[in-house]
Amino acid sequence: MEGQEKLLEIHHLHKDYGNGAVLKDVSLDIHKGEVLVLIGPSGCGKSTFLRCMNGLEQIQSGEIRLDGEVITDPKTKWSEVRQKIGMVFQSYELFPHMTVINNILLGPLKVQKKEKKEAEKEAEQLLERVGLLDKKDAYPRQLSGGQKQRVAIVRALIMKPEILLFDEVTAALDPEMVREVLDVMLELAKEGSTMVIVTHEMQFARAVADRIVFLDGGEVVEMAAPEQFFTQPETERAKRFLDTLSFE
Amino acid sequence: MGVFYGRIEKLDTGFMAEYFPLYVEAAKLTFRLGMTGILFSLVIGVVCSLAGYYHVPVLRQIAVVYVELSRNTPLLVQLFFLYFGLPKIGVMLSSEGCAVIGLSFLGGSYMAEALRSGLEAVEKGQMESALAIGLNRFQVMRYVIFPQALATSVPPLCANVIFLIKETSVFSVVALADLMYVAKDLIGLYYQTDEALLMLVISYLVLLLPISVAAGLIERRLRYAGFGD
Ligand SMILES: Nc1ncnc2c1ncn2[C@@H]1O[C@H](COP(=O)(O)OP(=O)(O)O)[C@@H](O)[C@H]1O
Ligand SMILES: [Mg+2]
Image 1: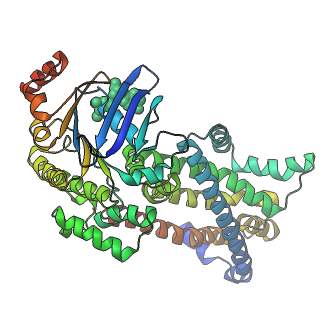
Image 2 (image 1 turned 180 degrees about the vertical axis):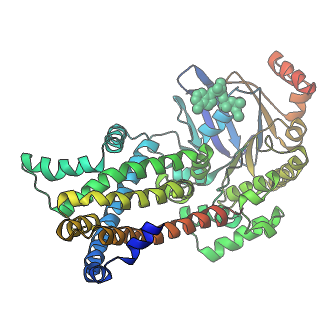
Image 3 (image 1 turned 60 degrees about the vertical axis):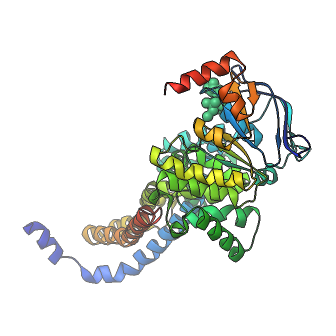
């Protein structure tokens, strides 16, 4: 990754919900076009880490920079920053009172003030890409989990973010639907999107990641290329974590 | 039944026709003041429920105290306080002013509770996913949270509208010529109790039935058409 532009820089991040540190001195750079996969045991702070990156959680100390600009500042205009940092959630969180197309258009129309026709065309192209154009007038309730999650990805994509955060986006899906969502993400990776992915799908992690970050107890315990991490983990904690997974 | 029919036959239709316009005027007054009060109730309800939802310091505590105070005192007592109590400390309000303020004070808490339950029913993740696409806090409320809350709140809100129109029947204590007042007046003057009361019941039905039906329609539309069921 040397020589590549740093997109997101995280320096000495501390996060505390008021009952002990959840993230302890986390530092990490994410480069343009990089796919970083964040793994670690449940409760180790993965979601919190992602949520700090787009200001859904306040941090106690440390600094995050996007394109070199500090975004962990009281004066940060999160509404602008979040257009550059898209996020997809485990539970989809589509807006149930809006059709698929309106879910997708809300950001472009209300945040970016785009023209309706133009935005609609883009939305349809994106829906086409994830194979859901025929669902554009459906309500979220009428979709399967996998379809909902693909719509949620489109809703993030249409903002043309510089980086996308995925928080266990397949964890709530029935097994037969996991693949259709992972395929979309693989596709995005191939196109050079910058992504931070939290996942328990180790096969997928191995396939998609440029770098694996292993988080445990709120600390970055190991950071390595996927082959390296999965075949020769350096730390005892990473070994143990991988062992527990192989029993699943 | 025989007794009842006998009484209907003996109804003085001439009397009813003569005083019918009084009821129309009174119904208009009831409707106008009722609707004004309901409108303010909704405004108060929105403010109080949002103060709670956003945990706005001070305002939220005020809202809690207000809701308790409002829900646990009868409108009659509230009106007495406004009409007879306030002048003692030098605040004179017109009859209509008292009526609207009293109804709004009562209705605000009911509307607040109806909206609060709707806001609480919205999935917690909705706020975050809306923020995540760059909407500001106001837009999140306007486009994402509030419409969902409102859909849940429509049945109790409609029930409140009907409840509040019915509550206007105590307006006569502040010397307003509302429906109740007209009926009582006629009974007092002419002892035509049957006719006066019958017209009173019919007046309220004419006022409330359309509202009931409209509320039912709105409810059904929101429940079945809204979210693609
Ligand atoms: N809103 C919150 N308030 C208090 N504690 C929280 C909150 N969210 C998460 N935590 C705690 O922070 C730790 C990390 O949680 P999380 O980031 O969700 O972990 P992960 O996503 O890795 O499972 C956990 O111990 C969790 O209980
Ligand atoms: Mg998590």
